[in-house]
Structure formats: structure tokens, C-alpha cells
Amino acid sequence: MNARQPAPGGLALIEDLVNTLLDITTGEDALDRAETRERFGIAAGGGLDEARELRESLRAACLAHAGHPPHRTVTPLGELLARAPLRVAVDERDGAASLVPVRGDSLAGLVAAAIAEARGDGTWARLKACEATDCHWAYYDRSPAGRGRWCDMAVCGARAKMRRYRAK
Ligand SMILES: [Zn+2]
Image (cartoon, rainbow, N blue to C red; front, top):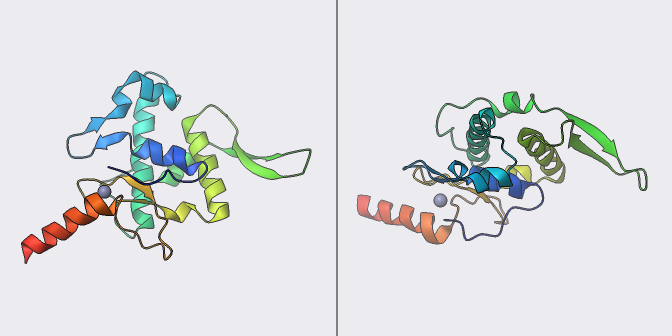
């Protein structure tokens, strides 16, 4: 469940990708659907395994942003992104510089460019994963202190409170 506004800029792509795993407990996966794969430009065959690997490494990074250990063993995100090099592009009209994928069509390249941009404007560390182990959805933490813990306080936060209450 995610009733929040999407993450800003290119982070929305990453948030979207992480949340294609609809249910972490049942394994229901939107990447099993052709139209979802198409939306992310994922090719049939090897592209799907790579996208899933990237997705779970991104989830681990989002969990790390919230101070949590990885949900499972993942390939370090930096290792995956090293396969998707970026280059500096300069706009000749105003001289503005940005990092863009060397191969513009790869999902990992788009993710790497989005992270570079978000790192620059300080938003990367606010893309987090919900701490509920049966959720782990990505969400953008808009709380002033940056200490949000759940994708949606009304759903996961309430469930966590209920569990604590029952455990008493
Ligand atoms: Zn959640």
C-alpha cells in the first residue's frame, strides 16, 4: 500500500521499480506482466533477471537509508551500477551539466543517472523502504526530520502499533 505522493524527479522511476514486487510475502510480481516490463524497457530473457536483481539491490539501499539491514543477500548496488557507466552532458545553451547514461536505453543506466541527480539535490537518502518485514515498499520520506519509518502510517504504522499492543 502506498498512498503517498510519488518521489520527486528521477527517484519516481526507482520507487516504481522497487514497488513492482507487489507482495514480498507471496512473491506477486508486476514484472511478470508484459505491460509492466514494457514500461521499464525490460527486454525479454536476461533483462528480466537483471531488473529483478537491480530491484532488490535498490530495496536494500532504501532500507539502509532508514537504518535497516538488507532484507536478504543482494548484489551490492554499486557493483550493478558499475555496469551502467554515466557521462557528463553539457547543455550548450546554458552550460548546465548533468550525468546521463552512456547507453541511454538501459534500465540500470537510467537508475544510475537518477541516483546521481538525487544525490546532488539531497533527495537520494530520503528514498526509503518501509520497515515492516511483510511490506518493504519504497516510499519517499517527506517528514521534516527525515525519520519516517513506514510506507504509509495508516497501514503499516497502524499494523506495527497493533502488533506491539498485542505483544504486551
Ligand atoms: Zn509498509
